[in-house]
Image 1 (cartoon, rainbow, N blue to C red):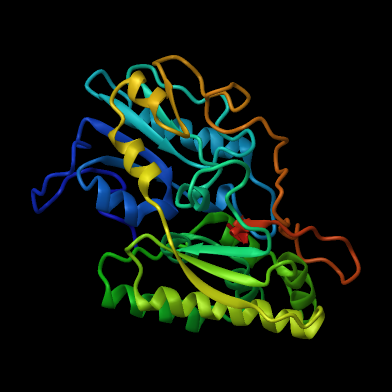
Image 2: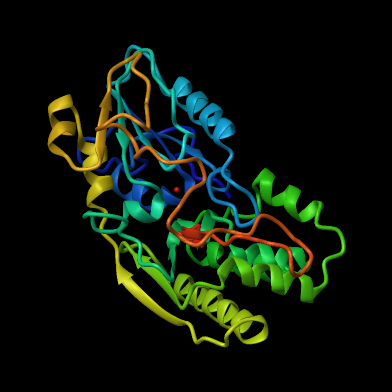
Length: 338
């Protein structure tokens, strides 16, 4: 199910949007949808799939990220556009060279969607060993638990459970199973035994001993229940294939201050005064290696979080876990950890 704001802005109720109206465009990771719709209901939004930069069994697709983000910027750009807000993963090289022709870009410097809601400070705000989840990651992101179920051909009941949640809460947009990468991974999996899948995904999440659900004020009980399923999944793999560690679940308060500020910045001076925000004039490219621009200079795919597995492999072959810190699935996936 897609959001009515993914193509066109417009608040059907006519409420004040706090200054971020039709003249403001937004290009963002789809996992940020609930917060963006709450903070800027009248903004014209283009969501870019989370799976391009965070996927349990593949590295980020930098070239495709750049192409998709640039296409979204081009779609929103025009002489009548005041500015375009850009909030997509800045870690790596995916945003390098993205630019507008007419409207300035206001760019988030947060590494990803998880970092967007964690307090700013020296170093990486994500705690090692923690697999982060948000409402948006649960609704729209692909994590190791979902992909594991898909490899085993066991997603029917999971999809039904999500569909029921969406029926109960009309503002919930469930799209995690709609992405091209997810469908391709599932379609090409072949015959995967539970043993092989279990060992492979254990390598992806073996470093995690805590699942943290970040609450920005928009979650439902359903989201905590899903986080509990992820906790049980990680713990069961540790018991079967690892060190038998226990995994805890916690709900932590998220901070939407960065996103709120990002949506309200109107001038270069505003951006200069704000943390983790860069202003790019029309024609000026985003450059991850430039001081004050989006993201820090890093090697593509390199992260301090445990890495994701690179695919279904025979037991014994190397597979690096990363985190949705995504971990990467922490990132969100640290796997966990947009």
